Length: 353
Ligand code: 1CP
Image (cartoon, rainbow, N blue to C red; front, side):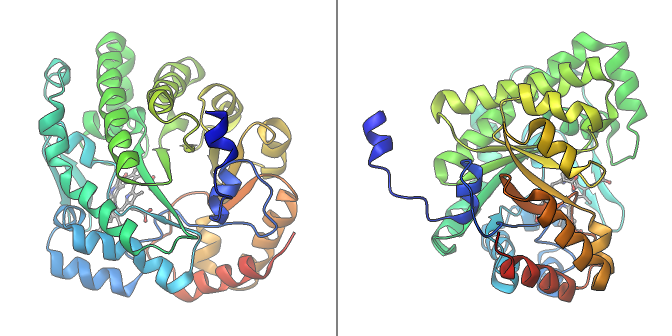
């Protein structure tokens, strides 16, 4: 093992260096939801595909969309074009993306029915996603990092129980707090499904994976530990059993003061910060344990101009010599003009620390 490590070729991917804890004089960057509706070339393919799910499950189109932002803005990483909700779909829950409204999931069957996962069926349904990864691998420049992803079990469960997007997920939380053992069972099912799904992505060839726990901040401390930190840790362990040290990014959005516990105990290598957190404080409290990523308010990218420039430079100066990957605090807003992404990319590419 040590021998393999010592003969390993030097890491050529800038973003992978940051994920491995190495200092990079240029700050690597990518943007959450960098492939998507703010790009005219995405909207064109979206029209051709029909439904959003058809697009996710068409390997040629999904691979092309994955590469669109890299071709335009030269980010340091491509993120697989798919959605976190393909996991409940592959587990047998109906899924529809309603035009202008967002996802709608079928009636939430009894949780017991999700208890036994038939992994053959599960992976067969996700086969088009695996095919997309193969295609992207063939067409992505060697200096670029390829990021796979899945939703965190808590966030995916939010949609599964609620049946749709929401700001508070009160129905999900009420169900979870009233039936904690049943909910544990759902989370455990999602831990197994997500571990399997990410392991497949890694086997085919993504360089890193991100776990999107976008609704982590909705849980009080006790339940945050039970349904965010512990399940994430199990997924990390399942991956590391087979791929020791494989880089995993965790994004427990809006977790506030609970971020530091997540950084210390979830086992992830890199933590995605939302825009509500103080970057300086995050660096001081857990920046020596993990690589940090994120923090730019997506509305500043929407606004562009002087405000975008000032905040981008402030983040870079605050990051200083810390292990840092530049990103947004949440996904790109669909009205964002692509020129603003150019403006941001230029600032980041010219900046040397
Ligand atoms: O109409 C369309 O074109 C669909 C819009 C869209 C897109 C472009 C959806 C529906 N999903 C996606 C792609 C997507 N989703 C990616 C692709 C890679 C990238 O470029 O980043 C990723 C990583 C996601 C992840 C995702 N889906 C999350 C986690 C991140 C986040 O934004 O918080 C969540 C919560 C979803 C659910 C989802 N899928 C789509 C929508 C509109 C939503 C949010 C629904 C809601 O809460 O109201």
